[in-house]
Amino acid sequence: MITGSLTLIGAGIAVATGIGAGIGIGVATSGTVQAIARQPELSGKLTGTFLLGCALAESTAIYGLVISLVLLFK
Image (cartoon, rainbow, N blue to C red; front, side, top):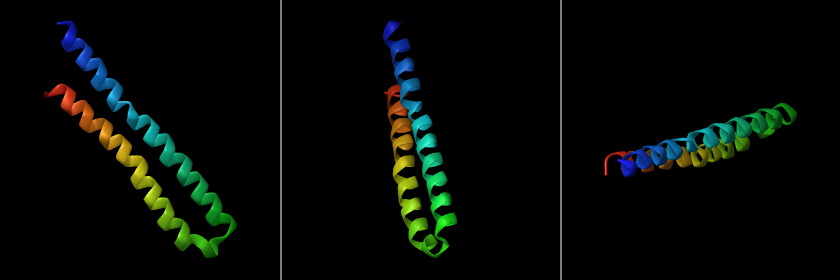
């Protein structure tokens, strides 16, 4: 009984990594928009770097989701 509830708590904590990913993407978006507003001619380079950063930040949320699913359905 205790093991089952601890598994659920662990799965909830693993899913909480999505909060960090959301904050990271928000900060990256803010920085990119400010940089493009200052130097519009660099928008092509900034957009590519921004999308790469968003993909890396989102991958942490996906890893958390996968780990929570593994904990729930092991």
